[in-house]
Image 1 (cartoon, rainbow, N blue to C red):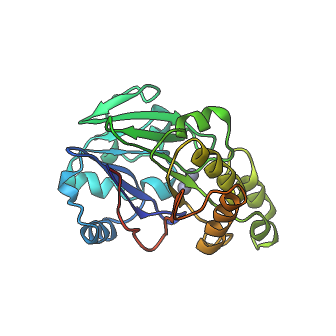
Image 2 (image 1 turned 45 degrees about the vertical axis):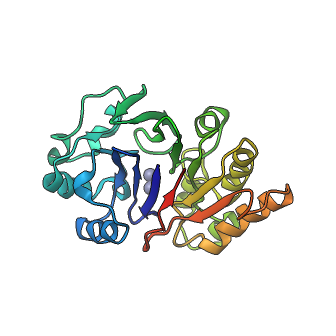
Image 3 (image 1 turned 180 degrees about the vertical axis):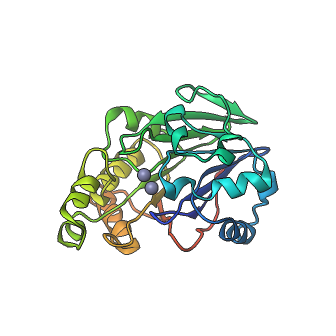
Length: 259
Ligand SMILES: [Zn+2]
Ligand SMILES: [Zn+2]
């Protein structure tokens, strides 16, 4: 399987996961010109996309979809509770699918699972081609055993590392917004992400992509260091025992090929 994050953060999200014969786009919160440009740089032919999976209806995850489906005419999967956030153009492509159950798209088994977030509904996705498994979980206010079970034993996990708690607390955001982000339905901090990465790496996961970093309350260096140090304290060496990449807002990451 191949994994590439095209963009990640509150200004727009998009990830591509592909197997031998299937290509899935997860979220599309960037404009079509940027998506096409970045896909080309990663050697991804958007005409080969088989389906688009939506995590939730916040605009940083859906705002590019209407123009994308109008041009590429591909089926869209989203939880019924998230549909109200979609425009009529997008709704015309939404499949009538039970998103509480696993289903197949080509040779990829898609297992959606619920994440706690202040949207109507939010899904993580566990994607497997029978040989490798990639799991995506962003926009979640907390980690719990049920979520962890969905992440565990993946070959690659893309997990939110949204904010540094001190930067957020000392920053300029209004009190209520800080409370929202820190709350159980907000976003995952660097510390919570790092603790989860450590547990996952001990359970066998090798590749991690830290995602949905806040532009105001985090830096790629802080997010990386927090996870790296947490791993190191327990004898897990980044670059040897585990590989940690950062998904960025304005630059597409290098494709990760799992074999
Ligand atoms: Zn988001
Ligand atoms: Zn969100």
